[in-house]
Length: 460
Picture 1: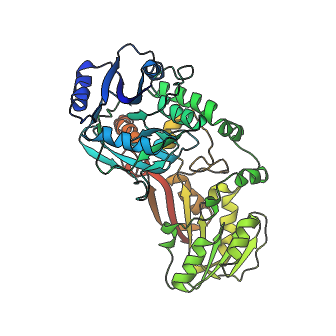
Picture 2: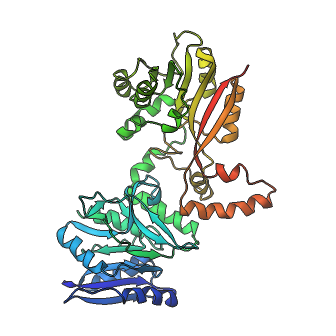
Picture 3: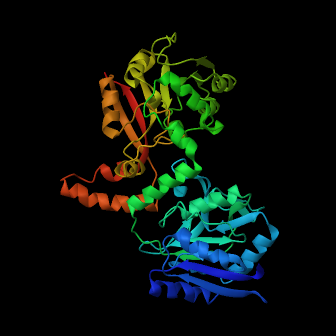
């Protein structure tokens, strides 16, 4: 192994584009006594198969980059040496990645994205995510994107599994970790590269590779999603698998709907009481809670005025009539067998001028629609297709839910979420809707809506 060499590895099907890539490499500053070499692969059967050819080369540092990735940091080779020399267990680095890969395998929808890159789908734009802690030279992540992958140790690429051009990068990230190495996104003082991402996606090939990845590396998801629907009682074990943070959140969108003059509030599914405690602190109101899971409820009891442990669908309530200014359902209605009955049950306890405040996931979000087009309905540990969801809603079915139970919706706000991949899909849907004589509103908002926030009052 030659410790003083860099090998640039690229699978090429567009020689003109690669020349632009190589022209940027030629401008890099090369450390003294170091060599550089190039491996151009123009007949790769797959990315993994092509990249495996690089493992025969003696240079220690291998820089795998797409033909449409252009290195713009002239001192990047110095940065690579410094980072790897100080961190021998850091097997691979990239410029963008996620700290926790979602159950569905798409890194860009993961928790805690890190890194930055200039992206050129049509015009130049900066994709900038979280930076590594200032006291650290890199952040350890689950997976990095394949636009630029730099290694200091040779691990075989899984060409036995990935026969095309998708998920080879996420797979290799996991292979690094299987072999005891870290994968990281460095603290980049200056941008390292530009990526001309293009707009084309072979959905069928992508989904085939994603399924392969999930089966090889995240098989537990397959086990969790075997049953599309279960009796609610059997879901309790699934809640135990959730990350502890699931029960700790403060929904700021719901807090913003609280009237400062409120005196009494009920939160159904109060979890550990973080939202209720914040309301009490800010408005000096009394917040009551109902929580199904004892461990979370016992935490809430230490913060709120009163907490009942039990199932809202089964319990009898002893609150005074017209007692609450607000009744809150923060991501709760979708977990119920019969949310219609629960809304009816709680109506007597809401003041005449009081409101129901609810946050509800939107099954019509573009991410769920793309999955369905690809033939998938895979449950996950959280998100729109949370494995504990029993009901699924769109704007129209939310309106029906409240209207049929005797409420008027005063406001329905959108919490939107999108990314480059989603926007590529959305751009193709507008012409289809015009062909079907459908309008753009509220579709343009709803297709990007991850959750709806509803404010409803009792019909007069």
